[in-house]
Image: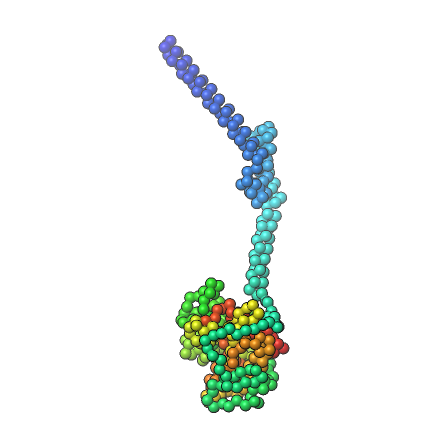
Length: 379
């Protein structure tokens, strides 16, 4: 019995020593972390500060925790209740407002971004007049057979002899609508960083941002700015190149049925020369623009085409004004035997915009100056 009592006493002493050590460690750690936490609350943590800014309810909790740390007088249950009630109070007061305000900010940002994009995409810089122009040298000589008031015409027909009367631009055209389309939709230009595309052929692509549709969109934008009603047909008609004119004939005829009193049809192409060596360019002020060219069809090949002379007269009238405002913007007009679907209206023409050696940027500049010319002629 005595031995047992001695053993138990030793054990008790050991346990007392262990408990004392544990208490000392706990007290030390409590004081250490208490001081560390107070320092954290005194010197605001950047992460907490960020969260405080974003979520007011967290800010409320942090502030209440700071008060708790400083006073250290609240009972555990009251402390918990204080924190929870603070969160609930913050949510009741601010929760709906936070969500609504956040939604409003997001909506406003989207609206502003959309507005900025619209402004950027639809930005209009009207072409100035009185600028110095210079045709840059290229490797294709200029040829023509007739001339009227500075407008040059190259007659490539077999049976039509142009007279002075045929060239006088005394035309009466309905300007209610302007129809723009692209028989050779997929024609494209020398790629640039801004206009790089996946080719579907030699200088051809189905990417509407890099083919003739993009050029048509630019002309449409400017003409609408000048107050004209423009129908822009973005249909790809040359998925089969050989039958492209047959398909565009059907498409345009349908559009004319839907849009009465439409005399003006612009079929926007580029020159068919298929390498990058030819880039007809005119410098207007400080900008380089791809040169333009009217191609006018006729009944010279034997097909019925009663409107060809009126089409030619309108082209001459437009080019007269272009020569006045921006000499060199247009190359000589070409008159050919084929009709090119121009029998559909008395103000129809092909406008070739640059060639394969030109860039899309140069062609878009051309549309700015062409639209200025057209707005002066058609008003």
